Length: 482
Image (cartoon, rainbow, N blue to C red):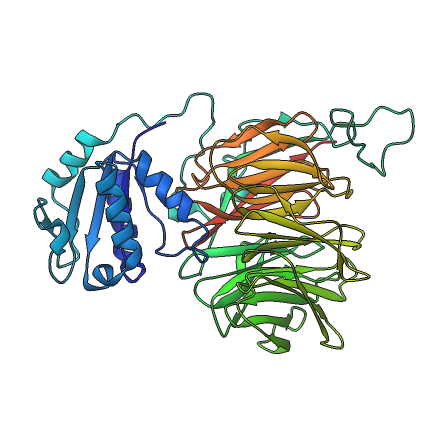
């Protein structure tokens, strides 16, 4: 894989850094950067690994950056690993700790000189190709919104067959497929990603942390750093509604009929009416930061998780709550089983707990499944679930079925309605997996330049939505010929 330059900066200087990264990319220099504290500090290991693997370390110096403990941690890591440090002075004074480094001033927000860029080029590999992977070209802004239905550009680059989740894995479990009768051969759905159908939804200011489709697949909800929740028309790729949140948005979910939107924020969870499209909160459940939110299948219960290691079950109609405790770390993900009988809660210490939603009691003991966990998800038929963090692992209760071959941090997971696993990771890739074999059936290495924070597949199995630490949302068409 091509080398890259790591950019260290303060979140307040993000706009300049985005321009800087684009400028360097046009000059042939690959970069990697992230927010100061993306989604708490759950990407701390990602940041550390990115510094360890970079070929050059660029620090954008401002008074805000000098006050940032994260910037200083990153500099310390770069020094420890012997990285070449190239400072850019955007505002204020040169950092005392690196005042012996050759610094270039960009105090009027100009881009660095050709000499600086050439120095980066000498450090960073110019080879930007990854053998065996298909990259999708970044579309120009002038045709982003119309490309989906263009008869000239909507030619799929490939359709890759994947098998449906219908055959037992390693003899340890037997997926329940409602469409397969005893003794019959399961039909293998064909899922393809039409790379030329990229649509980019723009409007958020800051990272987009969560997206979710309505049950009819016509609308997409999104939320993130800019303290808004937005509704988008999937076909027209246009925003149709927007609500202002009381805090930064972390996760969004739709109720059973798609009429209610639950949004987890820094101040708790809020419900909105998706039918009236008005800025009218239906109900507000105050608590600490609700970093993860999920609806039960019947739409009557919302599960949330917070930084104080608590899982809460909220009744949508009575607003009553039940508090579940047992996870030793901050809750990063919750997920109801398809039949609603079991709730999973994962934390940043790598522990997983299973809860009986009827008795509100834990099912067995907590399980140490990884060093930390970013996401959990159930297969559509409820036969198994997946955990994602340092590793991607499939589970049947306390039994690990298999571990998928992935060496980078997985940040987001989802399933297609036919049981194909979709994952996003810290290097911006989106992958499709056949859970029966544990093999990838499709990978897009150029989907995003930053960690993928969220992935979602429309219930009609026709659209994939992804978003990263940039302020845009990607929509791509899926093709199901089964």
